[in-house]
View 1 (cartoon, rainbow, N blue to C red):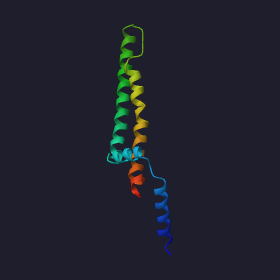
View 2 (view 1 turned 120 degrees about the vertical axis):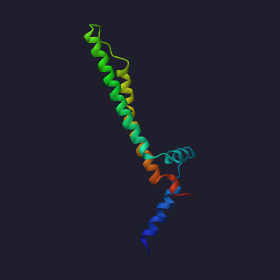
View 3 (view 1 turned 180 degrees about the vertical axis):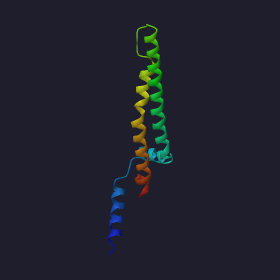
View 4 (view 1 turned 90 degrees about the horizontal axis):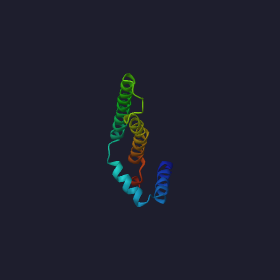
Length: 110
């Protein structure tokens, strides 16, 4: 007897028993069409944008100090933090995208 075939059949039966719902299937079909590099490039762009907003905010606050004005947080500094928080989310979406492509529920259909 070939144990590999038996294990594969058992895995297929388990996968059929644990089917995803219609919403999850729809999300998986759409995300599987996106290239994995998209999320990596998006995270890199968010890091660069966050850095740019931080530098712009630092320059504005430095210029205000030189002119003798009170130093308040520039509008670009909170924006830098907000954009910087996108990075882990985009990377996590990239990991999800890769998992869906490799081991999504569409691999085994009933």
